[in-house]
Image 1 (cartoon, rainbow, N blue to C red):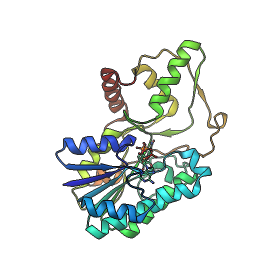
Image 2: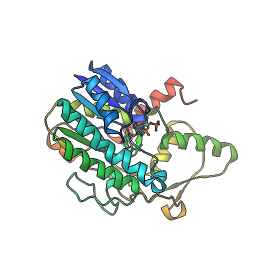
Image 3: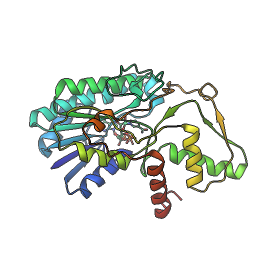
Image 4: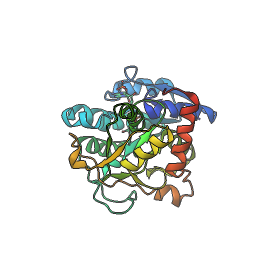
Length: 290
Ligand SMILES: NC(=O)c1ccc[n+]([C@@H]2O[C@H](COP(=O)([O-])OP(=O)(O)OC[C@H]3O[C@@H](n4cnc5c(N)ncnc54)[C@H](OP(=O)(O)O)[C@@H]3O)[C@@H](O)[C@H]2O)c1
């Protein structure tokens, strides 16, 4: 298949290109400013030239806190952008795999959320991403939407990199690293999402999928494992969300259940600890984060 990855320089987009190429697909990647998904004309001209069978949209305005003050841009990229991609795909009869987020949920649930659970985003980022799901579905029936969460990978900034950097600083200055222990989710490796995408894009099982690793933890538990795996000897202490206020509210509980993938016998997402250990081993062996 020919696959066009939009946002191919981002954290997920980089691995999406690599994994799709390894699976012998023909892959073309594009990113801002060579494409601006807020403009239908920009998307349409790229898509009509590329003529892919599948468009994978990894592009988004992902700075969650900045979305609170840049609402117009957040909606232009995350909502209109998804709609523009759907409309352009329809014109060449391509499918779209679009990436969404656990932030479409309020965070008040007490057990893992399935695809049909009601959405109630609390942040501008979450609201704009939900609007993107709706805009895409309105333009194109042949779409897959992966709601992912707590993403990390070798490229770009993420929680793992931050904990490694701050952890190393704390191991020198002797101060404790404070991490919230009252927010729960599932750390998910970019490469696993890409491998899961491979299982789905060839099918006609369209719609919304929850796509995270199995299991759950708090940010504190995740940070503890990061320090262990990277051999960083820093003191670590719990704190509450209230003690670490952020401009955009985060869901307190956003564990996703990959119910649709499971029901179709397509779920290849591994346990989060097993996956993270594998990722950490790769990063340490490559030395890229040293
Ligand atoms: N990171 C997470 O923890 C997380 C969790 C759940 C869901 N997600 C979703 O997963 C997807 C991938 O996230 P990521 O972490 O890989 O994001 P990322 O690293 O921020 O990459 C996003 C890419 O989109 C590009 N982009 C921004 N505005 C654009 C525009 N108008 N037109 C074209 N490209 C544009 C960015 O370019 P610039 O760098 O030039 O802006 C960047 O290359 C997103 O849909 C995100 O909402 C992420």
